[in-house]
Length: 413
Image (tube, one colour):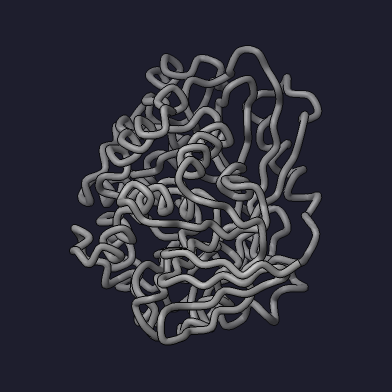
């Protein structure tokens, strides 16, 4: 049965970005309706590595990636791979990605990311307190692992670039690494220790706490938004069983945002990265903090009651089934560090909304400010959710967001 409803602001998408935006708006006293066919906070917001990655100032596309792209993308087991069946539809996105990987553009994108990430940790501290989730947020840093001394030495230039952008990082030799994480195997070349980093030891629980806080003051329509129609006094959102009139609309639908953005007047080169994780239940964690073996492209994540191994990049769209060999590669990689691990207790795949320049799309639509974009955060949606919410809240209130968002506007395409 079709129910016609109205609201002041509709937030399309109830992942971490949509939820934090909704929380910001209801705290302003706005009437908000969340529109999402699934359970709030699930999907990629639940299945990620849990890191608040304020150190993630390097875009996916860099000159180093550009040089090694053929071997990376056409190997079934590389950290960055393509589903060959999706290659024709991905070609326009890939051409833009190659362009954004050139040195000058990669440097520009890195600076823009650093500006967005500059106070990510502080904003997450504030958010965790607001939703009574401070116990989920752990302040023990994060490690990048280098498996040989040569790889460790080769990383120093990139780590210096991050330092120049304000990232706190300590170079850790094998002996110090063994003190920090005694369960890691001996013989590693060293690590980068991002001392100020924090992480969620249960992303699903944190999403639930944020959702609970939002839904005390907002409504959730469990429906899929498929059509946007502007009118003289707002926007009509329609889909199966859905007819919602809102004075303003925020598109925060993650990997599902491209069609809605086009209807709002913006053709955004958004495509989908398919992320995977596997988990092993355990009473005591094998690690004290997340650790990323950089050559393998995944994170070893200590979580409440389990070890989660999450990551790699697979470009393959929304419709193809999961790739069993990607799961197998995560299991193999985890056992390279912890050989005693048996079969995993569960596995998962989710969708990351990816833009070629690794920057999200945040700001008013080209068709008018009654539609606001807030999507395309790629690997760092959890990290950037609070700052995105603050920017959107300022745009709705008609105030300055506190930082320059020119690099994130839809008009850059």
